[in-house]
Image 1 (tube, helix red, strand yellow):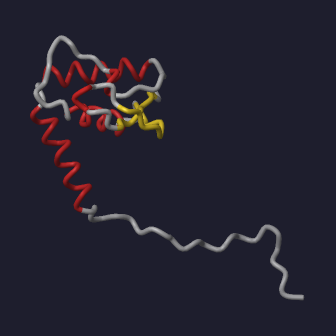
Image 2 (cartoon, rainbow, N blue to C red; image 1 turned 90 degrees about the horizontal axis):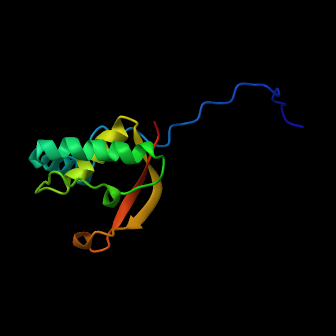
Length: 121
């Protein structure tokens, strides 16, 4: 018989399979820049109202998409700014993706899949 290993011997260190990304791929960089530009060009009053609306939806703890968010008082010429709002709230830990994608009900989105979110705080 071979050498016996004690039952509670320390586990050998695992080799790291994925190295940390210090220079993101070009697609990620462009995506992040586009989100930033959309946020910069959104009406500030709209952005404040939109963030409050997403927080309201998150507080219900029910899954939602940006299609469910309604900001009637003010509008923005940059609807892609919704991405900046949910990205910021995700980063702050207020919402998280459910893992589901839902076909948009918004006619201008042509039934494209939209990420579903849920509140966590």
